[in-house]
Length: 183
Image (cartoon, rainbow, N blue to C red; front, side):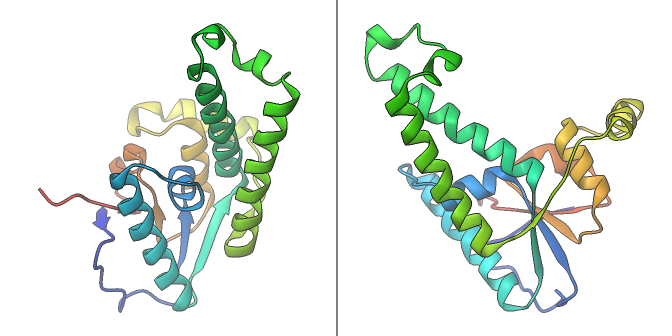
């Protein structure tokens, strides 16, 4: 079930409830935002997670989602570099990794991001196992997950996932907490 987070009543939430935070929400909250829509989303997600933490709920981040977020940080830096000058358009991501000054900038950004994550969230160290991938493929027609989200959704006993991604919205077994725009 999809549940909007804006102005949500948390009286039914118990201190024993646990929530997983998806990579996209981590990036909204812990990366500088310049677009007004993403600034609003970041504020709502941050407020929602803060309210859950003040109730004593477990707020979990999977290391699989952290890997996804770190990859996104590097990708954003590469695109920004590539788009900054027409002579850089042909520079691939692997070549970008070899530019010392740019690599140092990515490292600083990732370290700041990780220090914030480590301070606020409970990190679950995960791996991708052969059995997980087989189960993902065997049940592919029953869900709309990508492999990482499938593993996280099936590995944890959580009340919900806080995400801006629609992958989880098709699973009736998980409450999906999202920023919903009023129509």
